[in-house]
Length: 342
Ligand code: NAI
Ligand code: MG
Image 1 (cartoon, rainbow, N blue to C red):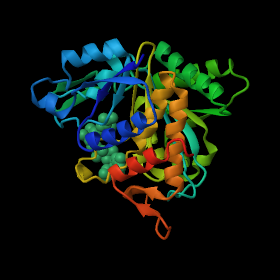
Image 2 (spheres, rainbow, N blue to C red):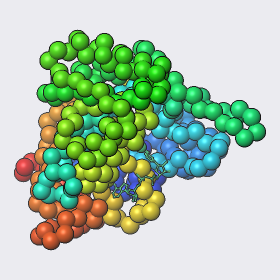
Image 3 (tube, helix red, strand yellow):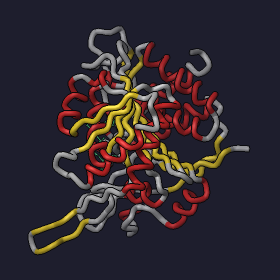
Protein backbone atom coordinates (compact mmCIF):
# COMPACT_ATOMS: atom_id res chain seq x y z
CA UNK A 1 0.00 0.00 0.00
CA UNK A 2 1.14 3.57 -0.65
CA UNK A 3 3.53 5.10 1.89
CA UNK A 4 2.07 8.24 3.53
CA UNK A 5 4.33 11.27 3.09
CA UNK A 6 3.60 14.82 4.22
CA UNK A 7 4.15 17.39 1.48
CA UNK A 8 4.50 21.19 1.47
CA UNK A 9 4.72 23.41 -1.62
CA UNK A 10 6.42 26.28 0.24
CA UNK A 11 6.90 29.87 -0.87
CA UNK A 12 8.68 31.73 -3.70
CA UNK A 13 9.94 29.17 -6.23
CA UNK A 14 8.67 26.40 -3.92
CA UNK A 15 5.42 25.58 -5.78
CA UNK A 16 7.16 25.55 -9.20
CA UNK A 17 10.00 23.23 -8.22
CA UNK A 18 7.68 21.02 -6.14
CA UNK A 19 5.33 20.55 -9.10
CA UNK A 20 8.36 19.59 -11.19
CA UNK A 21 9.62 17.08 -8.61
CA UNK A 22 6.16 15.52 -8.11
CA UNK A 23 5.70 15.13 -11.85
CA UNK A 24 9.00 13.22 -12.06
CA UNK A 25 8.52 10.92 -9.08
CA UNK A 26 4.91 10.09 -10.00
CA UNK A 27 5.96 9.28 -13.57
CA UNK A 28 8.70 7.08 -12.11
CA UNK A 29 6.06 5.01 -10.30
CA UNK A 30 6.61 6.07 -6.71
CA UNK A 31 4.08 4.40 -4.43
CA UNK A 32 3.32 7.34 -2.14
CA UNK A 33 0.14 8.85 -0.70
CA UNK A 34 0.96 12.54 -0.32
CA UNK A 35 -0.75 14.53 2.44
CA UNK A 36 -0.50 18.18 1.61
CA UNK A 37 0.01 20.72 4.39
CA UNK A 38 0.28 24.48 4.22
CA UNK A 39 3.30 26.11 5.90
CA UNK A 40 5.30 29.30 5.56
CA UNK A 41 4.39 32.84 4.57
CA UNK A 42 0.60 32.51 4.31
CA UNK A 43 0.46 30.70 7.64
CA UNK A 44 2.70 33.26 9.36
CA UNK A 45 0.52 36.04 7.98
CA UNK A 46 -2.63 34.28 9.18
CA UNK A 47 -1.33 34.75 12.73
CA UNK A 48 0.58 31.56 13.50
CA UNK A 49 3.93 32.92 14.72
CA UNK A 50 5.68 29.62 13.98
CA UNK A 51 4.40 29.42 10.38
CA UNK A 52 2.64 26.10 10.92
CA UNK A 53 -0.78 24.93 12.15
CA UNK A 54 -1.72 22.13 14.62
CA UNK A 55 -3.18 20.06 11.74
CA UNK A 56 0.12 20.18 9.91
CA UNK A 57 1.95 18.97 13.04
CA UNK A 58 -0.51 16.11 13.33
CA UNK A 59 0.27 14.96 9.77
CA UNK A 60 4.05 15.29 10.30
CA UNK A 61 3.98 13.32 13.55
CA UNK A 62 1.85 10.58 11.98
CA UNK A 63 3.69 10.09 8.66
CA UNK A 64 7.20 10.77 9.97
CA UNK A 65 8.31 11.62 6.42
CA UNK A 66 8.27 15.17 5.09
CA UNK A 67 8.97 16.28 1.53
CA UNK A 68 9.35 20.03 1.74
CA UNK A 69 9.80 22.91 -0.69
CA UNK A 70 11.68 25.99 0.58
CA UNK A 71 9.75 28.56 2.58
CA UNK A 72 10.23 32.26 3.23
CA UNK A 73 10.96 33.21 6.84
CA UNK A 74 9.60 36.71 7.47
CA UNK A 75 12.26 39.18 8.63
CA UNK A 76 12.19 40.69 12.08
CA UNK A 77 11.29 39.72 15.60
CA UNK A 78 8.17 37.80 16.54
CA UNK A 79 8.64 35.17 13.82
CA UNK A 80 10.43 31.95 14.54
CA UNK A 81 12.24 30.10 11.76
CA UNK A 82 9.96 27.22 10.85
CA UNK A 83 12.89 25.25 9.46
CA UNK A 84 14.63 25.34 12.82
CA UNK A 85 11.37 24.59 14.70
CA UNK A 86 10.63 21.53 12.55
CA UNK A 87 14.16 20.13 12.83
CA UNK A 88 14.11 20.53 16.60
CA UNK A 89 10.54 19.36 17.22
CA UNK A 90 10.94 16.22 15.13
CA UNK A 91 14.46 15.57 16.45
CA UNK A 92 16.06 15.69 12.98
CA UNK A 93 19.62 15.83 14.28
CA UNK A 94 21.49 14.85 11.12
CA UNK A 95 21.49 17.06 8.04
CA UNK A 96 23.27 15.35 5.14
CA UNK A 97 24.23 17.36 2.06
CA UNK A 98 25.97 15.56 -0.81
CA UNK A 99 27.82 17.72 -3.30
CA UNK A 100 29.18 16.51 -6.65
CA UNK A 101 30.68 18.28 -9.70
CA UNK A 102 28.81 17.35 -12.86
CA UNK A 103 31.87 17.69 -15.05
CA UNK A 104 31.83 18.43 -17.97
CA UNK A 105 28.10 19.05 -18.20
CA UNK A 106 27.80 21.89 -15.71
CA UNK A 107 30.05 24.94 -15.48
CA UNK A 108 32.26 24.62 -12.42
CA UNK A 109 35.57 25.92 -11.21
CA UNK A 110 36.21 22.57 -9.56
CA UNK A 111 35.82 19.54 -11.80
CA UNK A 112 36.26 16.82 -9.19
CA UNK A 113 34.21 17.68 -6.12
CA UNK A 114 32.59 14.63 -4.55
CA UNK A 115 31.90 15.27 -0.91
CA UNK A 116 29.19 15.05 1.71
CA UNK A 117 28.60 17.53 4.49
CA UNK A 118 27.06 16.13 7.67
CA UNK A 119 25.71 19.06 9.67
CA UNK A 120 24.54 18.88 13.28
CA UNK A 121 20.98 20.14 13.14
CA UNK A 122 19.62 20.84 16.65
CA UNK A 123 22.25 22.57 18.76
CA UNK A 124 24.87 25.32 18.51
CA UNK A 125 23.74 28.92 17.92
CA UNK A 126 20.48 27.56 16.46
CA UNK A 127 19.33 26.25 19.85
CA UNK A 128 17.13 29.35 20.12
CA UNK A 129 18.63 30.73 23.33
CA UNK A 130 18.67 34.35 22.25
CA UNK A 131 17.58 37.36 24.23
CA UNK A 132 18.07 41.00 25.00
CA UNK A 133 20.50 41.51 27.83
CA UNK A 134 20.32 45.27 28.34
CA UNK A 135 19.13 48.21 26.26
CA UNK A 136 21.83 47.79 23.63
CA UNK A 137 23.19 44.32 24.23
CA UNK A 138 21.78 41.09 22.85
CA UNK A 139 22.91 37.56 23.55
CA UNK A 140 22.74 34.30 21.64
CA UNK A 141 24.10 31.27 23.43
CA UNK A 142 25.99 28.44 21.80
CA UNK A 143 24.81 25.09 23.10
CA UNK A 144 26.96 22.00 22.49
CA UNK A 145 26.25 18.76 24.37
CA UNK A 146 28.18 15.50 24.55
CA UNK A 147 25.16 13.40 23.46
CA UNK A 148 24.59 15.82 20.56
CA UNK A 149 28.23 15.50 19.46
CA UNK A 150 28.23 11.73 19.83
CA UNK A 151 25.05 11.30 17.77
CA UNK A 152 26.18 13.41 14.81
CA UNK A 153 29.79 12.24 14.75
CA UNK A 154 28.79 8.57 14.92
CA UNK A 155 26.22 9.25 12.20
CA UNK A 156 28.98 10.69 9.99
CA UNK A 157 31.24 7.66 10.45
CA UNK A 158 28.38 5.22 9.88
CA UNK A 159 27.40 7.17 6.77
CA UNK A 160 30.99 7.00 5.51
CA UNK A 161 31.12 3.25 6.03
CA UNK A 162 27.72 2.57 4.46
CA UNK A 163 28.53 4.69 1.41
CA UNK A 164 32.09 3.57 0.72
CA UNK A 165 33.63 6.87 1.78
CA UNK A 166 37.27 6.87 2.88
CA UNK A 167 37.75 9.91 5.08
CA UNK A 168 35.87 12.00 7.65
CA UNK A 169 37.07 15.56 8.35
CA UNK A 170 35.96 17.49 11.42
CA UNK A 171 35.60 21.31 11.25
CA UNK A 172 35.60 23.37 14.48
CA UNK A 173 36.97 26.60 15.95
CA UNK A 174 38.33 24.94 19.07
CA UNK A 175 41.38 27.20 19.25
CA UNK A 176 38.96 29.95 20.37
CA UNK A 177 35.86 28.17 21.72
CA UNK A 178 37.79 25.71 23.80
CA UNK A 179 34.85 24.27 25.72
CA UNK A 180 32.06 24.07 23.11
CA UNK A 181 34.00 23.43 19.92
CA UNK A 182 36.62 21.75 22.08
CA UNK A 183 34.02 19.16 23.11
CA UNK A 184 33.03 18.54 19.48
CA UNK A 185 36.67 17.95 18.53
CA UNK A 186 37.30 15.78 21.59
CA UNK A 187 34.30 13.55 20.91
CA UNK A 188 35.44 13.28 17.27
CA UNK A 189 38.86 12.06 18.48
CA UNK A 190 37.18 9.51 20.76
CA UNK A 191 34.75 8.12 18.20
CA UNK A 192 37.24 7.93 15.34
CA UNK A 193 39.11 5.17 17.21
CA UNK A 194 36.03 2.95 16.67
CA UNK A 195 36.47 3.35 12.89
CA UNK A 196 40.09 2.41 12.12
CA UNK A 197 39.11 1.73 8.48
CA UNK A 198 38.25 5.42 7.96
CA UNK A 199 40.90 8.12 7.60
CA UNK A 200 40.34 11.30 9.63
CA UNK A 201 41.58 14.84 9.99
CA UNK A 202 40.57 18.06 11.77
CA UNK A 203 40.47 21.59 10.35
CA UNK A 204 39.98 24.93 12.04
CA UNK A 205 36.83 26.23 10.35
CA UNK A 206 38.35 29.30 8.68
CA UNK A 207 41.22 27.59 6.89
CA UNK A 208 39.08 24.50 6.31
CA UNK A 209 36.47 26.64 4.51
CA UNK A 210 39.17 28.36 2.48
CA UNK A 211 40.50 24.96 1.37
CA UNK A 212 36.95 23.81 0.64
CA UNK A 213 36.51 26.79 -1.72
CA UNK A 214 39.95 26.32 -3.29
CA UNK A 215 40.77 22.58 -3.32
CA UNK A 216 37.49 20.82 -2.49
CA UNK A 217 38.75 17.52 -3.93
CA UNK A 218 40.75 16.91 -0.72
CA UNK A 219 37.51 16.41 1.23
CA UNK A 220 35.27 13.36 1.40
CA UNK A 221 32.86 13.51 4.39
CA UNK A 222 32.89 16.65 6.55
CA UNK A 223 31.19 16.63 9.96
CA UNK A 224 30.59 19.92 11.74
CA UNK A 225 28.30 21.88 14.01
CA UNK A 226 25.12 23.64 12.92
CA UNK A 227 26.16 27.16 11.84
CA UNK A 228 29.46 26.15 10.24
CA UNK A 229 27.59 23.39 8.39
CA UNK A 230 25.04 25.88 7.10
CA UNK A 231 27.72 28.16 5.72
CA UNK A 232 30.04 25.57 4.23
CA UNK A 233 27.22 23.70 2.51
CA UNK A 234 26.25 26.79 0.49
CA UNK A 235 29.94 27.23 -0.38
CA UNK A 236 30.19 23.61 -1.48
CA UNK A 237 26.96 23.69 -3.54
CA UNK A 238 27.89 26.97 -5.21
CA UNK A 239 31.39 25.90 -6.28
CA UNK A 240 29.99 22.86 -8.06
CA UNK A 241 27.90 25.20 -10.20
CA UNK A 242 24.74 26.40 -8.44
CA UNK A 243 22.98 26.25 -5.11
CA UNK A 244 20.07 24.98 -7.22
CA UNK A 245 21.76 21.57 -7.48
CA UNK A 246 21.85 20.66 -3.80
CA UNK A 247 19.47 18.18 -2.17
CA UNK A 248 19.53 17.20 1.49
CA UNK A 249 18.11 14.86 4.08
CA UNK A 250 17.33 15.76 7.69
CA UNK A 251 17.11 12.57 9.66
CA UNK A 252 16.24 11.68 13.26
CA UNK A 253 15.20 8.59 15.16
CA UNK A 254 11.49 8.87 14.43
CA UNK A 255 11.18 11.16 11.42
CA UNK A 256 12.94 12.50 8.34
CA UNK A 257 12.61 15.55 6.12
CA UNK A 258 13.88 15.98 2.59
CA UNK A 259 14.45 19.35 0.95
CA UNK A 260 16.66 21.40 -1.35
CA UNK A 261 19.68 23.14 0.19
CA UNK A 262 18.67 26.55 -1.16
CA UNK A 263 15.89 28.91 -0.10
CA UNK A 264 12.68 30.22 -1.70
CA UNK A 265 14.56 32.52 -4.16
CA UNK A 266 11.92 35.28 -4.27
CA UNK A 267 14.04 37.11 -6.87
CA UNK A 268 13.19 34.51 -9.52
CA UNK A 269 9.81 33.24 -8.24
CA UNK A 270 6.94 32.75 -10.68
CA UNK A 271 9.15 32.99 -13.77
CA UNK A 272 9.48 29.28 -14.59
CA UNK A 273 13.29 29.54 -14.51
CA UNK A 274 14.20 27.95 -11.15
CA UNK A 275 16.27 24.78 -11.21
CA UNK A 276 14.25 21.92 -9.66
CA UNK A 277 17.32 19.66 -9.43
CA UNK A 278 17.95 20.17 -5.70
CA UNK A 279 14.41 19.10 -4.85
CA UNK A 280 14.50 16.21 -7.35
CA UNK A 281 17.73 14.98 -5.73
CA UNK A 282 16.07 15.37 -2.30
CA UNK A 283 13.24 13.17 -3.60
CA UNK A 284 15.81 10.51 -4.51
CA UNK A 285 17.02 10.53 -0.89
CA UNK A 286 13.40 10.32 0.30
CA UNK A 287 12.59 7.38 -1.98
CA UNK A 288 15.63 5.53 -0.64
CA UNK A 289 14.54 6.31 2.92
CA UNK A 290 11.05 4.83 2.41
CA UNK A 291 12.45 1.69 0.81
CA UNK A 292 11.65 2.50 -2.83
CA UNK A 293 15.26 2.25 -4.01
CA UNK A 294 14.42 1.14 -7.53
CA UNK A 295 12.24 4.19 -8.10
CA UNK A 296 14.98 6.34 -6.57
CA UNK A 297 17.53 4.93 -8.98
CA UNK A 298 15.21 5.46 -11.95
CA UNK A 299 14.72 9.11 -11.00
CA UNK A 300 18.42 9.69 -10.40
CA UNK A 301 19.46 8.09 -13.68
CA UNK A 302 16.88 10.03 -15.69
CA UNK A 303 17.94 13.28 -14.04
CA UNK A 304 21.62 12.53 -14.76
CA UNK A 305 20.82 11.65 -18.38
CA UNK A 306 18.96 14.95 -18.76
CA UNK A 307 22.01 16.88 -17.55
CA UNK A 308 24.32 14.80 -19.76
CA UNK A 309 22.11 15.52 -22.76
CA UNK A 310 22.75 19.20 -22.16
CA UNK A 311 19.22 20.07 -21.05
CA UNK A 312 19.43 22.58 -18.22
CA UNK A 313 18.01 25.64 -16.50
CA UNK A 314 19.78 28.98 -16.83
CA UNK A 315 21.67 28.87 -13.53
CA UNK A 316 23.99 26.11 -14.74
CA UNK A 317 24.30 27.26 -18.35
CA UNK A 318 27.58 26.42 -19.99
CA UNK A 319 28.57 28.93 -22.67
CA UNK A 320 29.40 27.52 -26.05
CA UNK A 321 27.98 24.06 -25.52
CA UNK A 322 25.41 22.69 -27.90
CA UNK A 323 23.07 22.82 -25.00
CA UNK A 324 19.37 23.32 -24.55
CA UNK A 325 18.40 25.96 -22.04
CA UNK A 326 14.89 25.31 -20.69
CA UNK A 327 12.48 26.44 -17.99
CA UNK A 328 11.48 24.61 -14.82
CA UNK A 329 8.52 22.80 -16.42
CA UNK A 330 10.37 21.72 -19.56
CA UNK A 331 13.27 20.46 -17.44
CA UNK A 332 10.86 18.26 -15.45
CA UNK A 333 9.30 17.00 -18.70
CA UNK A 334 12.79 16.19 -20.03
CA UNK A 335 13.57 14.16 -16.90
CA UNK A 336 10.19 12.37 -17.04
CA UNK A 337 10.79 11.47 -20.72
CA UNK A 338 14.10 9.84 -19.84
CA UNK A 339 12.74 7.60 -17.08
CA UNK A 340 13.60 4.03 -17.83
CA UNK A 341 15.89 5.06 -20.71
CA UNK A 342 19.06 5.77 -18.82
P1 NAI B 1 18.13 31.50 -1.74
O1 NAI B 1 18.80 30.19 -1.67
O2 NAI B 1 16.64 31.49 -1.80
O3 NAI B 1 18.67 32.30 -3.03
C1 NAI B 1 20.03 32.65 -3.19
C2 NAI B 1 20.35 32.90 -4.67
O4 NAI B 1 20.36 31.65 -5.37
C3 NAI B 1 19.30 33.75 -5.38
O5 NAI B 1 19.94 34.56 -6.34
C4 NAI B 1 18.41 32.73 -6.06
O6 NAI B 1 17.79 33.23 -7.23
C5 NAI B 1 19.40 31.61 -6.39
N1 NAI B 1 18.72 30.31 -6.37
C6 NAI B 1 18.29 29.65 -5.26
N2 NAI B 1 17.69 28.50 -5.60
C7 NAI B 1 17.73 28.42 -6.96
C8 NAI B 1 17.25 27.48 -7.90
N3 NAI B 1 16.61 26.36 -7.52
N4 NAI B 1 17.46 27.72 -9.22
C9 NAI B 1 18.10 28.83 -9.62
N5 NAI B 1 18.58 29.76 -8.77
C10 NAI B 1 18.39 29.58 -7.45
O7 NAI B 1 18.62 32.33 -0.47
P2 NAI B 1 18.11 33.74 0.12
O8 NAI B 1 17.82 34.67 -0.98
O9 NAI B 1 19.10 34.08 1.14
O10 NAI B 1 16.76 33.39 0.90
C11 NAI B 1 15.45 33.62 0.39
C12 NAI B 1 14.43 33.11 1.40
O11 NAI B 1 14.56 31.70 1.55
C13 NAI B 1 14.58 33.69 2.82
O12 NAI B 1 13.29 33.99 3.30
C14 NAI B 1 15.18 32.58 3.62
O13 NAI B 1 14.82 32.63 4.97
C15 NAI B 1 14.59 31.36 2.94
N6 NAI B 1 15.36 30.12 3.09
C16 NAI B 1 14.63 28.96 3.27
C17 NAI B 1 15.25 27.76 3.35
C18 NAI B 1 14.40 26.55 3.52
O14 NAI B 1 13.18 26.61 3.47
N7 NAI B 1 14.99 25.39 3.72
C19 NAI B 1 16.72 27.64 3.28
C20 NAI B 1 17.40 28.89 3.04
C21 NAI B 1 16.73 30.08 2.97
MG1 MG C 1 21.36 27.63 4.63
